[in-house]
Length: 91
Image (cartoon, rainbow, N blue to C red; front, side, top):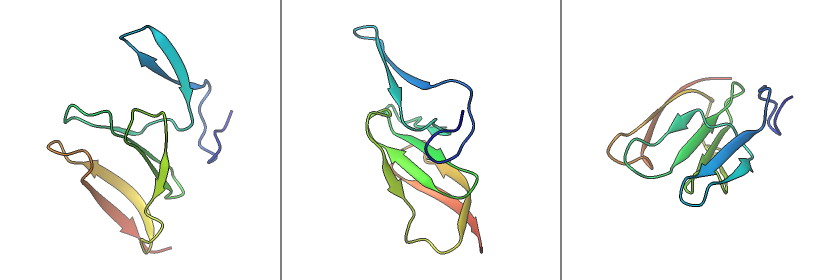
């Protein structure tokens, strides 16, 4: 079943809260996860659309609309997950 952006995955993507044991479905399947202790997530799709979530997937914002070309790769900074490095190619 595709998500809203057309990415294929078989099951819904879930966010679990270990404090109270609840689970919530989230809009995008994360492709990149923070390593700096925050809950920052990114979802990068094959067509180049990039989504970011500062709250572990509860809310998402589209990023990269002003970038020229197509984002094909993403690296998240280990020191600050809000900082990313990208690679792109012209469409």
